[in-house]
Amino acid sequence: MLGRRQFSLDLNSIGPFIVSSQIFNSGVGTWTAPPNLIMAMVIAVGGGGGGGAADSDGTVNAGAAGGGAGGYAELWATRTTLGTSQTVTIGAAGAGGTNEGNNGSAGGNTSFGAILTANGGSGGAGTGSGPIAAANLAGGAGGTASGTSAFTLTGQRGGGGYVVTVALAISGAGGSNPLGLGGASRALIGGPNAVA
Image (tube, one colour):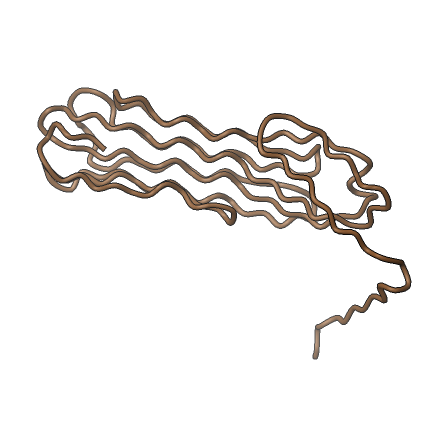
């Protein structure tokens, strides 16, 4: 087929393979290359942003916006690229806004040495306290990602928060990425003292 390259590898010529994995879920750690490493897949995901908080003004219900998903980066690399060890930093999830209508906080950045970086998503907008001035609130932006020769995706933006009627409000869902779904959207139907 025109433009298509074929590649073959005789595995018997280079001996038996052992597949192993190292998973880091939080904090800072050190990845150490296994003995006789040939290639490895490295995946990094930034922390998701926290959703905003809603606060009724006593007249109108309002829905806050969802936080953006963290960025995603994936790389197949040889031992030459990866080296013998790399510092791994895992970005924590952002906190949701407080119940006074504050914005959610941004998620933390995840990195694999200087080879891959997946930035955290931005926090969703809160309604603010007092009179509800905005009918629509923007969801947090998704985090970006980077790495030489890496496959990267920007995290999905969080869903917006909306005032539909005086008594109906919809809060935004959290953004998603290839490794996880964001929190679900919620709808509020009722009196003006309910909050999302």
